[in-house]
Structure formats: structure tokens, C-alpha cells
Amino acid sequence: MTSPDSGAGSAADLPDYAPIPRSALGPALNDQGYYVGRVERNLYYVTDGVYQSAFLTTPDGVVVFDAPPSIGHNLRRAVDQITAAEGVSNTVTHLVYSHHHADHGGAAFLFDGDVTRIGHEETRRLLLRDGDPARPVPEVTFADRYTLEVGGERVELAWHGPNHSPDNIYIHFPGHDTLMFIDVVNAGWVPIYNLNLSEDVIGYMGAPAIALSYPWTHFICGHLGRLATRDDVAVHQQYIADIEASSREALASVDPVPYYVAGGENFWAGVKGHLDAITERAAAPIIAKYTGVLAAADIEIFTTTTTFAIMQSLRLDRGPSGPVHP
Ligand SMILES: [Zn+2]
Image (cartoon, rainbow, N blue to C red; front, top):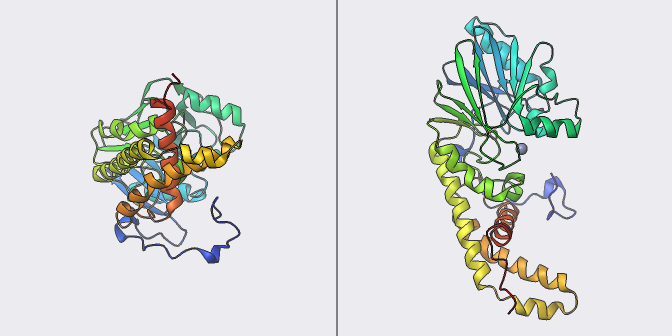
């Protein structure tokens, strides 16, 4: 994979990163490249080691939650494997989108026919905009809350504002002690670039507290191999809080004047020098603190880009962006 700072490097030139703690990895995959595990009772999750989806088996059929293309046909195999073992129907009757992104929903088209697709109203709007045949639009939508009842089971869908994406919802399984909430917390790992490629920084930063306000023991976070715990969410919150505090300190302490003087009439050169200096000062202690705590914390650009996004949001969303001219 190339990244903005990888230059002309090839895959063979990857730096010698810190080892990944065993606790950050999930169970071994089978020969077909997936693992399906029971979350609780008739709720299961499926992973390829990097992506996660989930399904609920009921006497009236199966409800699928997200269909990442990287899991693809293995999602059907996992459903068939479990429903055969349980002796229940393998017919997928419902598909729930967590949000509109193709990397979590791009295999939705595999579940066609008489399937009811459910998503936030913004998910429908964005999917209509994007026009991807792999992600058929949900015909059942909701604004704030939706209760899905299938085969005696209940699932509570809720939208609490934009975070990672404008439409990312909380999927609560009250009868399974489980919350599914995608692309904010990576269990045991740092977020990738820009807070996991998130659009609303303030919403992203507040989302873990909303997740923790639900009662649950098991957390399906959408990425990597294992389920998350409440402790995983707390460590993630601390990582983000540390970046926020570090960014505030750096914003207050880096003097912009020398950068603008050096930039001369190239004002953008001054901006770059100033903001890069703030970002570097803010990110360095975070990278040092979390290397060995969160997997891949030593891939510096992840924390650096996340720090840049938070630092900019502190300036632009929270304010002030700078002194008011006298
Ligand atoms: Zn996403």
C-alpha cells in the first residue's frame, strides 16, 4: 500500500515497525480466509482479519449487518455454516447498513431477491448520489431511531449525529449485550489516517462516549480480527484526549511569527511551516506514549494526520482561530 509519505518506496521497503501485540490480533482464519464467531446466543460476527460484519439467525431468517467486499462470498459461507449447525433457515431476509461507505457495504448486492434493506435516511441519500450497483439503496430508512424486530429478536438502530461519516449509526442488540458501531474505535489499534478517514472531527471525538452510554459487553467495531471491550474504547478515548491536550499546548506555544517572516510574500509557505511545527510538537509525545500500547502507533503518519485534523478542528470548530485584530 502506498501512503502520502512513502515516496517511491516499494512494498519491500516497509520500515521495521514494532511487533503487533498478540492481544491486538483476532482468531486464526479458516482455509477460506474467514473466521465466524458467536458474539452471544444467535448473534455472530465474521472477520477476514481486517474487516468485520455480523449476522443474527432467527426462526424467520437471517439479518445481516454490513457486507464488506473483502469478506464478500465468505459472508454467505459463514451464514450457511452457522445456520446448518443450528438447524435454522439460511435465508437472508434483512440487510442493515451501518453507513454508506463501500468498504463496509460493497458486497450488499450479493444478498438480493426478497431482502429488506435498512439504513439511515442519509445513507439512502448518499447511496443514491453515488450510484454504485454493488450497494443497493435501503428502502426502509429512519431519521433518529428504528426498532427492527425479526423472529422474536429486537435490534435498536439509532443516529446520534455525524461522526466518521454523516450517516454512521449505532446498532444496539439489547438481548445480546452487544453494540455494533463502525469505523471509530479500532480494537487495540490506532485509527488510520485522519481519525479513520473521518469527516466530522468533533462528532468523531464525542462518539465513543455515546457508545459507552449504552449497556453492552461486546463491541463490534468493524475492523481487525477481534471484538472490542469497554477497556478498548477507554484506551481509544484516552489516545484522542491526549492528542487534543497536546494540540492545545502546541497551538498555544508555537510562535508563528518566524515562519511568516521566513515565508515572506509566500504566505502559504508561512502557513505550512507554522502548522507543520504545531503538528510535529503535538504528535511526537503521543507516538512515544502509545507505541507498544496501541498496535501500529509507530506508523507515525497515522497519529500525525489525526493530530493535524484535531488541531485544525480545535482552531476552526471550537475557536478561537487566532487573535482578533485590534
Ligand atoms: Zn467508513
